[in-house]
Image (tube, rainbow, N blue to C red; front, top):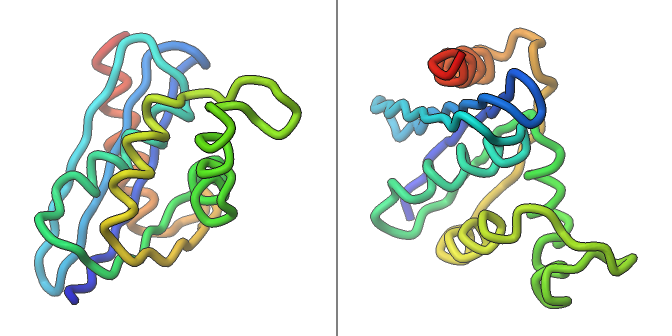
Length: 145
């Protein structure tokens, strides 16, 4: 199975407001950068879309190391929260609605195809790929100002 490193970040100028996301996929010596944005969104939606967009580019099952500064995304996946929300009809344990069920559904379906290791990094702390992804996200969100 191929190993791919994926680095992601999302941002929002106001929350909600103009947002952007960036992702870098690394396979051996090859790198692919992706980015996008939305004029009216939230930071968490951009974090989710960065991972979704990266995973959608993979044509086969892979071993992935997913590195992000988003506890929302990483904990939602690694701790099984999103699967629990889906099993309860997109409700949290306290009965309140889970946010972003449309994106979580897409992400969970994509994750089923791969073996994923989740790595959290502190944002804005000098991690080279996280800084690149943040710069792409900021540039995308700036397009809507």
